[in-house]
Length: 161
Image (cartoon, rainbow, N blue to C red):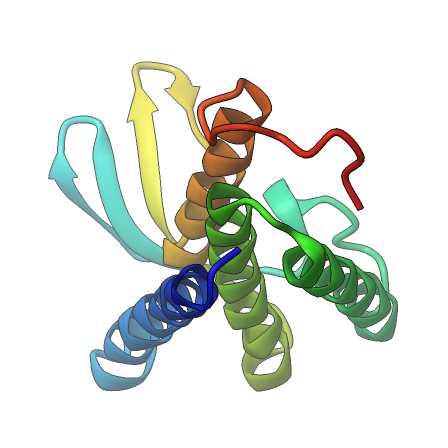
């Protein structure tokens, strides 16, 4: 991994973090969007605000905040160690984007006690989970990791760390 690749991954992680923070600042703090209010932008996409006390898709929502904080801190530490040891630029980029999104959602827990979610896709009776920019960044980061797993990221070391 070149220093250029290291810095690029850091920038990508910071962009993921900053994009989510800016969006949340605008919609929650600047516009004072009321919780539970959704505005349809298309027949299948709404923008609104809900607070998620759980982790992904509301999982573990009944766990106390300190329990979720321990899980999130452990996951972030594991991702950071993986990022630091990674030799593939694609893996480092994917992990950095995941870390940026996860760190922003973790900051939500400090600020709001839960995570602010905004975007809702639906078609007929089918409804996708409500998510935010950080969740989209995490999904993008995981997509990059999957591309590397499929061999898109180039040659792999014979003995990975």
